[in-house]
Length: 323
Image (cartoon, rainbow, N blue to C red):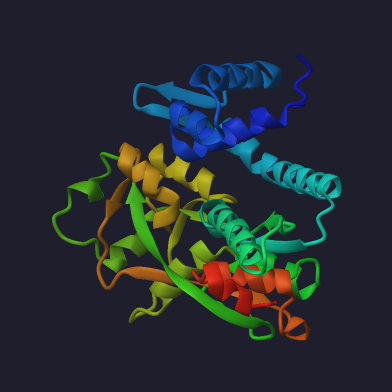
């Protein structure tokens, strides 16, 4: 083999396996058989001639090479998804189009549910207006950290963005959505898992942690929380990675503890790949926020409809927002 990846489905399979921690769970999420997904992953490993997964009885974890491949593949898969959405809109004659950007946790764990609810709400609105088929809004999603999302909104490349950082951009319109709970997690067997009392924040600050890159809302939340202590604390970095999936895998392999959204580690906690550790003080949370340019206020109808869904409002009330 020449080491070139030509099968995007294989990259999606690898990314989903890394997220779920198991080939069976990834197959269920992608709607294929476990045997078919396993074969796809083996073919990808042969094509690249590198081990991408560490398979054990407890599940499958990304290797170091696997984490790198998934990180590089994110932009490719996002572009492919946008292309497919555009082609579907051309074939169906859809006129409702919306470009959005979202931070990784929001993009992976919330946006898919929002899009399902958006389509259902649009159809319900059409039926209330006298029936007939309502052209669905085709959403083009770009994924990045909170800093990148804000830049995309400022540049006008997307109509609305969704960020997960306590640093709300003062030059953009902001709308709060909800608070997101953050958890300190470690690999099973880490000394912190045997503690009967919460881990002091001073100890957290002196322990090398697996962290996201600068500009990430996940990282900003922890660093701001430690800096607000008396005296101020600064975290130590054991490893810095560009995706939540890579951070989860590194933590599970014992590189060090780390802080991630409960949304991102929910399956890992159930499967026992990660363990949540209690830390001193109140629960650590961060705001999830919608942002858009002041000159786009009020929002275009498609963006307003999505914002309504993101806020948890569906059904008849959708018709009152954005036409």
